[in-house]
Image (cartoon, rainbow, N blue to C red):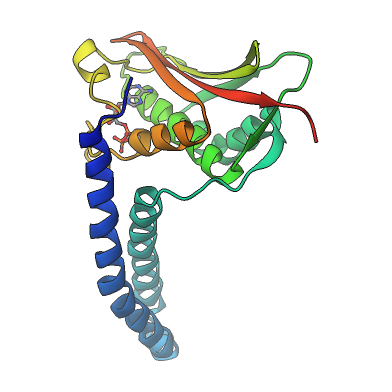
Length: 234
Ligand code: ADP
C-alpha cells in the first residue's frame, strides 16, 4: 500500500492546523489550570473538591489531545537505539494489559528461541505497536457473540535480514472497501476515532525503512504485519 501525495498533504495540513491550535488553546488552558489550582483550597472548604478534580482532569485531557495531534502530524527524525523485538512487544503488552483485561481479551506472544534486534526510535515504534493493539482491542470489543473469547496474538519471525512482527486479532474484521481506506488520514469508523493512528504508523514505519501490511476478513479477524530491518546486538 502506497501512501499517496494526497495523503501526505493531508498530514502536512494537519501539522499546520495543530500547531496553530496548540498555540492558541494551550495558553488559555494553562491559565485556567493555574487559577483552578489557586481556587482549590476554597473549593475544598465548600466541600466541592470534586469539581476542581474534574476541571483539572478535563483540562489535562484537552491538553493530551492537542499533544497527540501535534505529535502525530510532525514527522520527527527517528532517534535510534538498538533493542530486542521481544522486549519491545512485552513492554507494549504490559501497557495494554489492563485494558485487555477489562474487555476480557487474552494476549499471547509467540517468539523464536533466538532474540532479534532492531535499530529503532523506541518511542515511535512503540506508538505504532500500541496503535495496532488498541485497534485490535476495539475490533474485539465490537463483536457481540455469546461465548466469544477475544484473542490477540503477537508473533516475531525472522525473514532473511528482516523481522516480521505480526499482530493478529479475532475481532470484527474488515471488508475490501474498508481495507482500501484504513491508511487514509482521518479515515475512521469509530465515534471517538481520529483516523490518524494508522496513517501516522505508516509514516513512522516507512521512515524506519520498514513496511506495514494488513490482511483481514469481515467477521473473522485481522492481521497486521510490521516488517523492520534487523540489526546485530550492540
Ligand atoms: P482510529 O482508530 O482513530 O479509527 P486508525 O487509523 O487507527 O484510526 O484506524 C482506522 C480504521 O481502520 C478504524 O476506524 C477501523 O475501522 C479500521 N481498523 C483498524 N484496525 C482494525 C482491526 N484490527 N480490526 C478491524 N478494523 C480495524
